[in-house]
Every structure is written in C-alpha cells, then in structure tokens.
Length: 132
Image 1: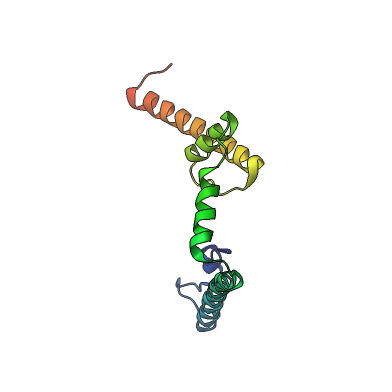
Image 2 (image 1 turned 90 degrees about the horizontal axis):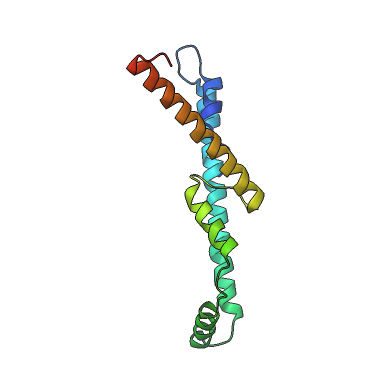
C-alpha cells in the first residue's frame, strides 16, 4: 500500500551509511502514520460490515438460501472469458486492472522472456566456444 520508503532511505543516509537522528525520527513518524492509516481503514471495513448486517431484517437462513440460488445459477463462461482467465493465471505479478492493463502486462512479460532466451543463447555460445 503506497510508496515503499526503501528507495528514499538512501537519500537520507550520512557518509557512514547511518541515518541522522532527525531522519530517524521522521522515518518513525512516517511508519507510525502509515500504520495508523491502515488501522483506520481496517476499522472502517469492520464497521461497514456490521452496519450491513444491522440493516437487514430478513432471517439469515433466507439470505443464505437466496445467495446459494444465485451462485448456482451463474451463467457459464464463454470461450473468451475462459481464455482471459487462463491468461491472467499465466502472467506473474498481474496487478493491473482491466483488459488494457492485462494486455500491457502480457506484452511486457513476452519481451522479458525473449530477452532471457537471447541471454541464454549468448551464454551457450560463449560456454561452448562456437563462433556461429
């Protein structure tokens, strides 16, 4: 969640590779603020779940039956949806949303695989001593 502080950390180191006392206190305040924000969001989620249950006046058994009926009547996936689901499984670290992000991540992954193959081919040539 948010930006990782690690790349920024090196900018605040003195010549010995240690952080000054003021920077340490700034970092501790930053980390504490991030933890407080996460806790606040978590509390809001829990509170919203409780409110949802309070609003509903139907018995839980009726709601569960309705939910089961809806889950059982899902429409079958068509071929395109199945292929997209398979593609999402194949691409590592697929965090993008939507089709455009999925296709962008796929293109990047293909390029990285091509570069790996080229590097391995060069390594094989060097290690075998062939001049092809």
